[in-house]
Length: 323
Image 1 (cartoon, rainbow, N blue to C red):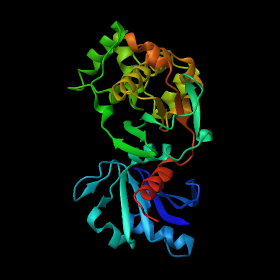
Image 2 (tube, rainbow, N blue to C red):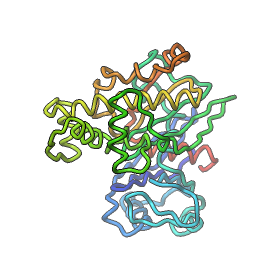
Image 3 (cartoon, rainbow, N blue to C red):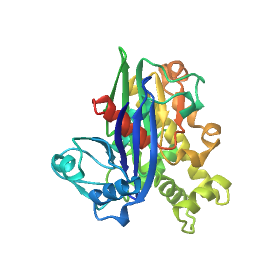
């Protein structure tokens, strides 16, 4: 049975697992551990600790997803002090080969091996993600991850993108005013400024400025709680606008990719529960003029697998022939 070490390295935590590929292509994750990045000076130390906790040797190959670009001789991770040198990683970590992927690229790879139970219905037809065609994978989190999954002739190809850095395009007069407010702080306002996690606070601040109201500061958890419960009317209004904008952006990306489905990912969506489905998200997603009927036919699903980063890293490694 093909086996490798899978790792998902974020800003706060490093996750590790032993990944095994079944004869039918399914991937099983075992011995999952979550370590705090702050507890280790380097990835080397974290891998050594994981090896010690297992009490046995690690597989010969590893697939590692990291938060940040994976190009160049020296990689500096997003919100993580560790520095990686790809050319030296295999030797330093004790592996024959290492497959290195961007963390959101890994999420798109995970979709290639997910079953229906891992992809909950959000909007559009309640049908599985098609086995052929293009899938837009979109993940609002600290930023806005975007990747393209192309399925053709039994092959799956993942194309990482920087779609989250497209320009934000307002669609009504209120969004015109929100954009004007944000331009006072940012020379260029990308969609990531609006529909990533920090966007909720920025929208709330813009609405307060528009209404000439003072607002009390809220931390991230408090802001999302206030928005979902309605305890803060501006936070609730900001969340309504956030969902509308996510629908617009997801629709733009799906149209640009000429996708046959959309898969949403990221840690924000589980917080929303049914709120997203009840919001104006889908109406905005479909509102693409002459292509509205096409957009209405696209299934939109959300990843529910607990470890998409680990699963995707493993899928990327196995796809490259690591075993």
